[in-house]
Image 1 (cartoon, helix red, strand yellow):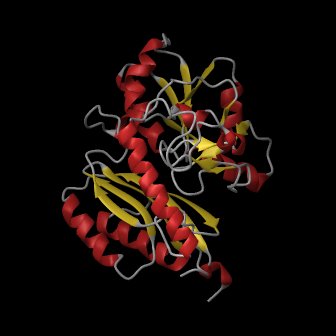
Image 2 (image 1 turned 90 degrees about the vertical axis):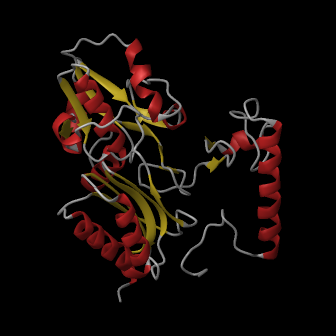
Length: 314
């Protein structure tokens, strides 16, 4: 077996497709994954499937093949990255109302989503003075990286997007280009705008991750500034899709600069400057107890839920 197949990979994927029996789908995947060393999260809803997983390439390849067979589809929106450790600590398969939560009921994504713009055309589109560039991610994600000049809806969760966007008085004929991490939030956000009557709505195909991969491969000038937050143990990725510049507050999940961990407000596993005033004493106490158990396990060299695990460890 080649060394590539011994490495760890991150597979992120989604597909909006009708799933009638979500429980049966969950059961089939659970049985299939019983003997696979794959970690991460798969969300299943009547509207489709959304997942981000880490493991060895052979296991992940066969899982994707299985998902396509179960759902009777030929393609998944799939992004692949290499990494040195498991980017998730355990495997979770969940049934949800939505695979990405907007809270606006069923939307026909195939019919209503915005026009997909390939990364090769993105720079030209956002350079157009008539284009409104819209970042549909959350505040803490935007804080560490964005396309310069893009509009921040000022949200703390995607569910807030429909209400937050109302304050902008865009013309229904405005040319709007939106982006997110991997594309899934833009699928719904663009469809929501089109349902409100906006006609010229575009979305970056595959999101920021796909754009960075394109720029890296083709050595093209990048208009992306900063790092891209990801919802796993990598925390954030730079222009080479490498992690390492940030640590995470395990209380509020925000990415922190190393300098922010030196502040008095930062108590490892309990609080940081962003959440110290909003967390209750009972929340802080529970977090402190959890951190105590983690520190205890670290001293003993034992595994724990937040330990970064490589293939050499297992």
